[in-house]
Length: 235
Image (cartoon, rainbow, N blue to C red; front, side, top):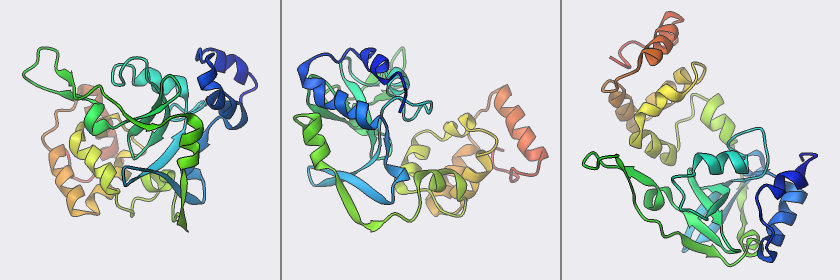
């Protein structure tokens, strides 16, 4: 818990009565990382189970920090909505005026259109309501009956012999060029994880069509020199 939690909360400008339960939650718990717990947690939304990843707070980790994540999503999330949680492998729960809304990346995110001058258009700026209040959202959280076998960190980074889940493969399919944004430490692991499934191997085939920048070429050359990059992946 940050020592200056009250000062950090004041930066959010959540002074209205409707935000009281959320502010009290931040003061008591700050961040909750559901992947670090022994069980999986989710909320039921229209019959669909949406897994919870992180209830955001104040953290040195960008993926857990309220301010950092909202700045990152500034143009992607409609104005006045404030992201408070990461769910469903890339989606968000947002707070505005008390109620909680669901930002679904497949529906509400920007998409790229080559026919448009500046490239990006919004898919849909209407966010679906999930709960009337933050307190009601908390009451919707359900724990699975089975213990999770691994954490997100292990699955995503430390265990190359475990294939990516379907949701992660979907993100790779949408943007295979994201491989160049990864550190040299993780690129070989990701390639190995993609090679472990048929769907992943199709994504690897897309890597041959990518056009790396000069900086990307240097990173790939360094990996190849170290014997960490299989032949033919990017050529």
